[in-house]
Amino acid sequence: MHALSVDYGQRHRFELDAATRTAEALGVVRHTIVSVDLAAIGGSALTADMDVPKDRDLTTSEADIPVTYVPARNTVLLSLALGHAEVIGAADIFIGVNAVDYSGYPDCRREYIEAFSRMANLATKVSVEGQLRFTIHTPLIDMTKADIVRCGTALGVNYGLTHTCYDPNKEGISCGRCDACQLRLQGFSEAGVQDPIEYQ
Amino acid sequence: MHALSVDYGQRHRFELDAATRTAEALGVVRHTIVSVDLAAIGGSALTADMDVPKDRDLTTSEADIPVTYVPARNTVLLSLALGHAEVIGAADIFIGVNAVDYSGYPDCRREYIEAFSRMANLATKVSVEGQLRFTIHTPLIDMTKADIVRCGTALGVNYGLTHTCYDPNKEGISCGRCDACQLRLQGFSEAGVQDPIEYQ
Image 1 (cartoon, rainbow over the protein chains, first blue to last red):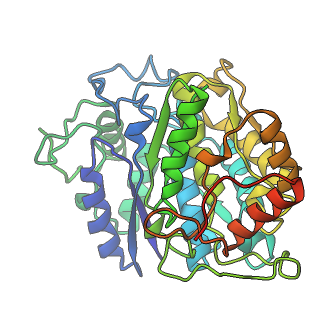
Image 2: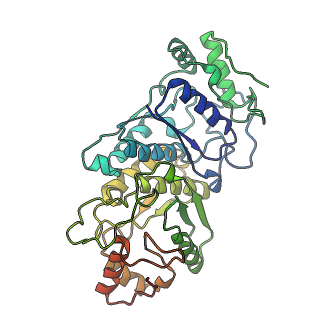
């Protein structure tokens, strides 16, 4: 198992430290971090100088695509994962997209992932030469956040090592009020599990 | 017209200066350069510490995919172009892939480009919401290098501003011996046009 994280200029870069801790705890062969300057493209509250929305009522605005959407982000992430997979000879690529609690992101849906898979198998030397056939796995795609918390807890995931907040303070402490924090807290609450991380 | 270049750690970074000069000469609205650290992934003579092949006989080895292949490169480039296009509201993306003289690169073929287009239109907020339908244009895909030289000459392209070599010296002077140089020189020769750039 290899882990890949992407430093794309996200304001919650603190998640890269959390990914490093988690990858270490899982005993991966190697955790690779690739940098890509998506701030040069902009267009998102996560990479440009825009405010991250707080305290939104997610029961009513769920269908909107929020300003935290990063243009083509999952396509960039999966493209880098594809190149990495080709180099290390891995046929199976896993991404934690989730279409349930947050249906607003187009690149979290199954039909998008299927289209990416078809493209991926036409894109690379190893797939075209028949050495590898890539599969994009999305184990979380149809689960609610509560399901994910329950499943992770049953599997022994240490959620104390993880990070979710889009807009942490300088010490990396989560805000508890952005969409990502709200969905995380609601998931833990519905699952009846205590969220072990600290909030502001 | 907007121009996008990608600094992916290529050893022939000098091409970014050539792209800047060319974009300026064409009067683009803006030339954006996005950095992505593909060296962290490696696996190519263009981004890793490997020798660029010289003086290959391209008449016999044409079908092989050479070590200058960069894993998933065009997928990464097009993904960044897709994000950029979404932000600036551009429906038409142009890429200069060419499948004729160099049939070895899988991500230069028409079926790959078509699969990328299908994926792109499922990937973004603007396409899913029906504001834009992306088209990936590949005007050079079926042309020989000689055709490209003839066509560019007829259109008034200043080839003196361009750069092709994979392995230029520190002053940016082309080697004349890598695959890219050989194909360029052959294209100019077949077109009966003098190549205005300098060689070592």
